[in-house]
Length: 206
Image 1 (cartoon, rainbow, N blue to C red):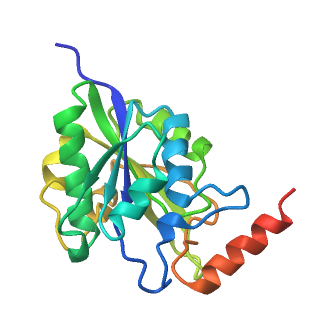
Image 2 (image 1 turned 120 degrees about the horizontal axis):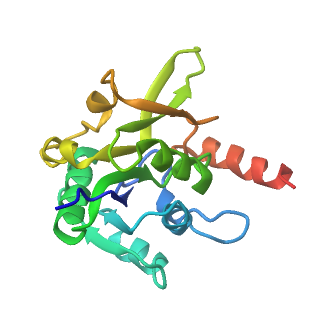
Image 3 (image 1 turned 90 degrees about the horizontal axis):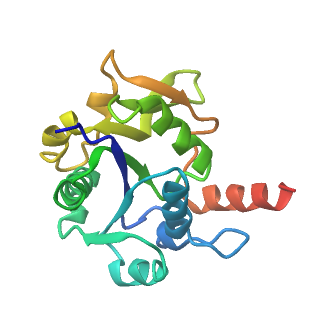
């Protein structure tokens, strides 16, 4: 039997956005597109065979923002325990409903620098079987690996055991993990100040 080489997107959209004070999944860009819908479309444009969106806090409202999108929506009842369980739920859903998928591309809603072209580059480097992380530079000059990242099915048993705040970073630190640079990858929409900076950047864009 040939090895599955398709890629499924797993979009983490379960957080409560406590520091922001409003659901970051529902933040709208200058075109009126919500963050969760934007990333769903970016994963599709990158070539993902299926997209799983993991919901938690404000699940009904976020689900409403996905009406009309081609996605598989799943709720994580333990979303308050941290992102680890959301990753596990997303990967388990792919394993059960994506028989021709050989890797998952894990992404989040709150990273405005992530584009479909970056996701496509990650998938291209993975070639269906390799682990590939995004590489960004912190303000102190240190480079770190993180999501979005492609993880092959060999990693899934470990990912499905995640809980609490532990994410995929331990796997991404392995020496055999490839990287794809993501400019401004450390910037995410955690606080009102972050959102203000993001909106100003959109106003300055042509």
